[in-house]
Length: 373
Image 1 (cartoon, one colour):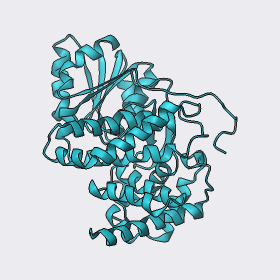
Image 2 (cartoon, helix red, strand yellow; image 1 turned 30 degrees about the horizontal axis):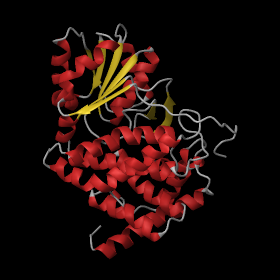
Image 3 (cartoon, helix red, strand yellow; image 1 turned 60 degrees about the vertical axis):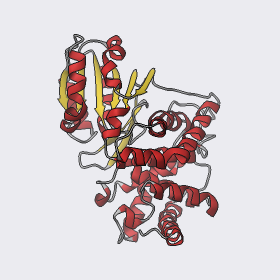
Image 4 (cartoon, one colour; image 1 turned 45 degrees about the vertical axis):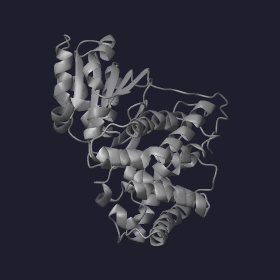
């Protein structure tokens, strides 16, 4: 049951400050100085070379004393504890990089009871704005969600840095973001991540997120391929990061993300980005609730336009077995999973059918539009 305690309060939450624009890192000291002067900076070696050095130089020129810790690659309990041990004496945490780095930084800040600033270097997930982290096992399987008492204090998005990332990351962010409205519409009577019902504002943000993606997604994707910061690119970065972040957290998640979590049971999919699996999960959710063909075609067309996977072959598992899909369905329907936010009937068998049906729908659509899988 989506709302077993019959909660009636509506709840909306967000980061304290969100800043987005080209070369925004050059003003980082202005936005971060109120959090302290001795941050723990978590980022991997690639991100450090791409943007971390610039941030370090900027902050040190303003009197900051930075403790840099290299992120090991997985947002696991073990990695979080390792960073917590290195964060003693710091007065706030900076998470710079992709979704797993940001999730780790948020968890570290929560354990140390410190403020946290998030500086994404891709627009590949809606993780930057949320008061939660996805925790994985050290080998990459979904383990649990961790929830925190507050959202990030600052989210600083430098679109010049974002534009230098491969366009695949922006597309994956769109795969994550396109699920926002699709899922939230099924969560009207469910408890959101803040512990209350969905507000009208959250619903409006979800609608706007989808509108921006469908209107500007392809343009932004092409701009990213040539590292151009354009109005369409800025709009989609905001949709992927802010709108989707606020929309999922205060609106709610349903089957698309649960099926993504189920896909972590297939090791050969671990190389895929979060949003690439969520995109396919969105198609499976639409099949699960019996969406009409015309509605389904809108999403399939959008996903193909930005090279998101809509078939097993495009996911890289053309010969996936029924037993493997049943394991995905079982994990998708685990107790406490977001799939239970839906009012629609849910069983492992129905989810199994929806996943297979999504592949069939994707193949049929490709056959109609003439694009090879």
